Image 1 (cartoon, one colour):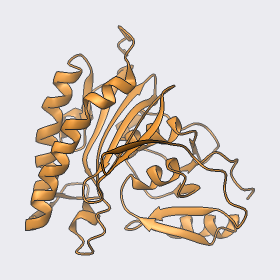
Image 2 (image 1 turned 135 degrees about the horizontal axis):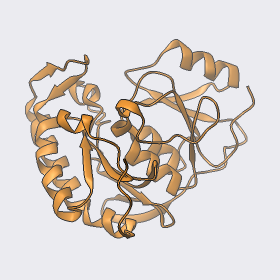
Image 3 (image 1 turned 45 degrees about the horizontal axis):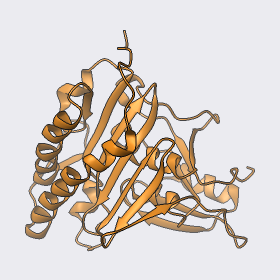
Length: 266
């Protein structure tokens, strides 16, 4: 049985409180990034590095101090994957885009992610791309923001330009279904980038849609999903329903993340 919410939370204040541990986790990741990192393959076939574990070691204690009564489900803490779903819980991905982290392309498309879910919906998120020095955060009813170069600015989705939509797609998980969808919608302008940055680019008005057919977990998306929704966007399932959280096994179905405009007709 889900635990009932005991009190309201100032989501924006919580996001700002978690900014330092997220930056500290990013610094730990960059230390390892500059030196190279050993990698092993987990049971699900995905890679994990020292950086994933170092980031999680920073984040989990800090979150527990900031919000001691809220359950934490984190990618690398496998025991948490068996937790029953509560009405309020964190979803944490200490290093999203591990494959991008391992690439020697210096694009830095990997992120630290903390999302808060209430009633099945992402209500607060913070995403940090340490190699790019871009930190995004957002909260329900409070808006979305980016900090770059110590300057904080409000961000919001854009109206797609007259020359056409720009789609963001996965740099490591592109598939035929995605290509077919883009062709059917007549979208030819795409930007391939790793990690949860795809959501953030839409939230910042730099792109318009992110179609995703290949598998993702809820900790991959919750933080950036919250930011996109706070910026005026939406995330829908293939049947047009709002993407919810706390699904069996914390697994996502295919989804489409949009900016402010309705999706193009198929």
